Image 1 (cartoon, rainbow, N blue to C red):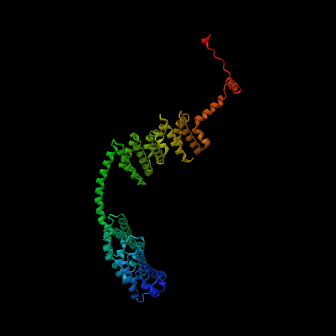
Image 2 (tube, rainbow, N blue to C red; image 1 turned 90 degrees about the horizontal axis):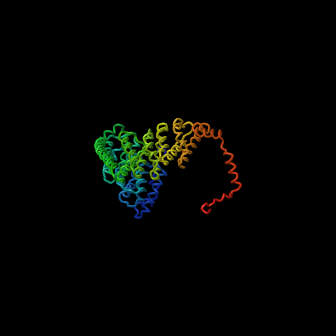
Image 3 (cartoon, rainbow, N blue to C red; image 1 turned 120 degrees about the vertical axis):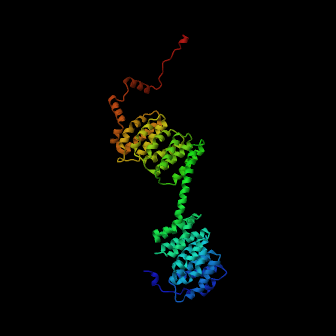
Length: 480
């Protein structure tokens, strides 16, 4: 039940002090503002207003109209709109006799950019439009929607959005008059106007359903034109991209891949297509062959974004190239390649690119071997005993064991990191199966012992006891 119906009607004009009523026309804006605030507070305290005689509101409405039309102080205008909205809510349908007096003036204030005025105006427009039929507001609303001011168009489209939401049904006369204008505003030069217009059409769709399509024909025909333009532009962009990729200037090549990277960053999810596969092949080829590290770094960034966006079967095509390219020591490229490895590894099981890992561990360049092993340690550190890739590790383990005795210290350390990751995943008993070569070494030591020969031990003891050993004097035979 509507609580408003249960309230008693109150004559707020009679409760409004006479002095304050006179101050509405004062030359001082503070007095005008204070007088209207007193009335606004009375209306808020007594939401249901007296309808015994509507003439008591005539003078107030005249003053409100003058303030909205001519007052330059935004504070006074904001309070006047607040009073106007309160009167409309308090009188409801009885307020309809005043709509023609103030509606056009209210719409004129839609061009005001001040937040205080815009906030109060939106509330007042909603209240006044709810007090009468749509036929009373149609003509002036259409006229102001056609005005060139973008602030006014945005404000009124936002009003229509709220108006359609509050309605249970929509008058076809109102729809035929207003919606064609709103459809035109969808193509307005101002983004805020376009957004507000689309929002209002969305709320109208709730009322009209598929009937709204009748009004959208201009947009459909416009879409056909845009599709043709898009096809032409797509060819031009592709031609420009191919030209830049093949350029001899590294700056132009980098610019081409920067454009791809910006597109990837704005697309959280990417669908595979023949064109995208062709672009991916080009990026991978340039990343592998281009001697400029800035270009290769941008290619690696682009492939990383693609890996995160596609999330399927990505590692197979990139790992072999990346493991070879990791021989580069420059941080600007290596850091991007490392990120690409880690991102691609989440798209494909390790079993699918085991051969690429084995080849990376067997590279002649120690940096490639070390970085491949470090990648493997990072990957395995994200596994647990249930997800551990047993078959893949069985194939990779000979290369890891070989790297554990590598001449390069970084390679050995990286190999030990892999062993530690395996131990963390499966525990000591299970990890012994993978570290069989080390177990064999233990057996050899147990069989042959780790003690030196007796004569060597005696020599060591003698040196320990007599650190200052006097070596025999060497004779100079030339003096004999």
